[in-house]
Length: 231
Image 1: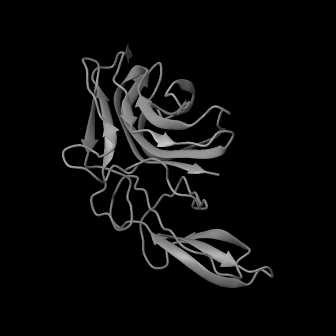
Image 2: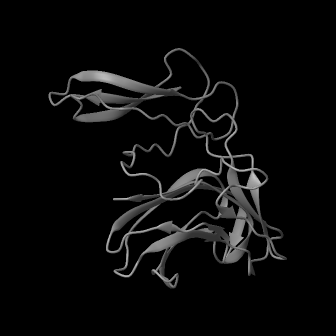
Image 3: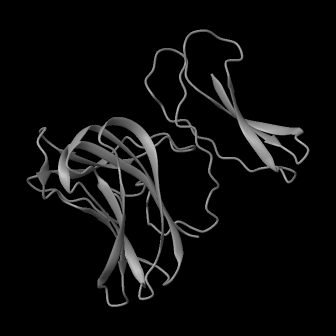
């Protein structure tokens, strides 16, 4: 099965298409990605999915197309690919409730054969509070500005009162917490999903950091490709 993004000009004429192939055989849900640049004449487009020459049964779901941010990612090592023993720029703690680890399973990324992610595991099937929080190093933020916060997450047997939650924490120039902007991941057992949130910073905001935890839950959750872009 092949999914295509078809580019069309202002008159509805075909310009080009960008194809992403799925898998042969019997496989579970897999994330497929492709980046491309549109033609100068492109005005609109549509998604076209077909099996050009094959047989069997194939499923497709969660089709998304979004414009890449034009501003740089403010989160250092948000894809968890850099480091030795632990990901650079991140604190992955553990305690009696749960443990964060650097996992060799991440979102499929072109050019990266073995992508990494961060994983938190909380044993049992009873909701537990007090899990450790993973944190990034601080980065500069502008006051009274719009930002787009995105990340990818997946989970296995996650349940309880709250799932994994990722926060952008705003700080003033002295390092005092002003406010945080939260985006929750999923309960249950699900594959990689993109999570997004937009927000406007406080007039006193000068910097911030990413904080990820499971406030009250259990199971295993992964997070990858954390991005924060100025809008």
